[in-house]
Image 1 (cartoon, rainbow, N blue to C red):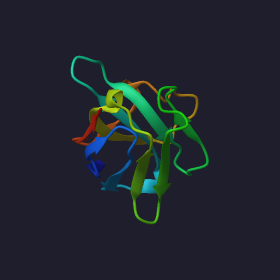
Image 2 (cartoon, rainbow, N blue to C red; image 1 turned 90 degrees about the vertical axis):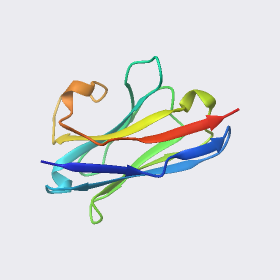
Image 3 (cartoon, one colour; image 1 turned 60 degrees about the vertical axis):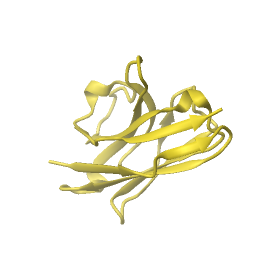
Length: 126
């Protein structure tokens, strides 16, 4: 079992920045690929970014590419999402997720992940 706890959300003006953190516990963090998804009212859960267990490879949704950066610190069992040039359409609950090391599995499909955090609210005002 893996427990995930997100933090760092809040209210920010358009063009601003936030850094989300996700602290993991329960299993060996470096054995897990990590991802971020977001859920906005009236929309389906949307893939944001993912990072492999080693941190060597990262993946992004087209909507955030060039603005968001995912990273991880395996010594601290934490994954981060640096969000820059935020837009009102980025408003959502951001959830951290994890799965055991995978090969050839899509990064943007929620059903391929095993564990989820409760999420942290990000609100971007115009």
